[in-house]
Length: 224
Image 1 (tube, rainbow, N blue to C red):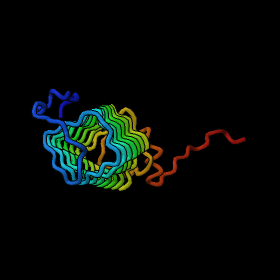
Image 2: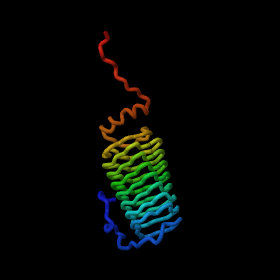
Image 3: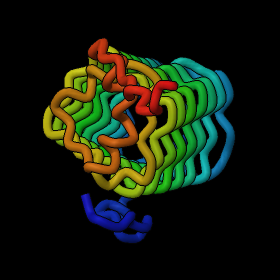
Image 4: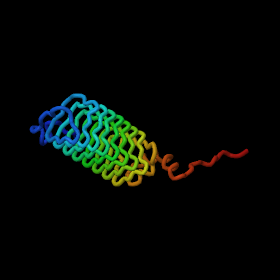
């Protein structure tokens, strides 16, 4: 994925895109389609598959899109509100300026996915598998990564608030360039991550509680 987000015209398949006819449907297969604008409420499109497609200024409110598959898909300023994206499979996908709120995405599989300037609020990613994923200048608030597997994941410029990592398995996860790092629970899930010295100092109280260490300085005042 490029360091900077691409524009629609930069996509190698841009000239082949054609408008999507209607709303996505269960198990529908869609190649080189473009969805530009509109609100899709309570759409049921479980198992739908999109290849070399683009979404811009689209809102998905509610609905069930379990096992949604994206392969080489570009999403720009999309909104996902309370949508069921459990067990979705996204490959070579670029997400720019998107908002995910109250989304269920447990068991998701994301590989070679980049998020630019996105907001993920109260997103359930339990037991998800993230590999070669980048969150660039994003806000992740109350994101649940419990029992998730992360490999080669980074968060440059991103703010992480209330992150849940209980029983997560991390490999080559780089948190050093995160703008802020706050762990709500599961500090033991940080095993396998790389953090900076300043982040270590900020996390020290939580890490101490996690391993059962009591930190108490002696009272050095002279006894009378």
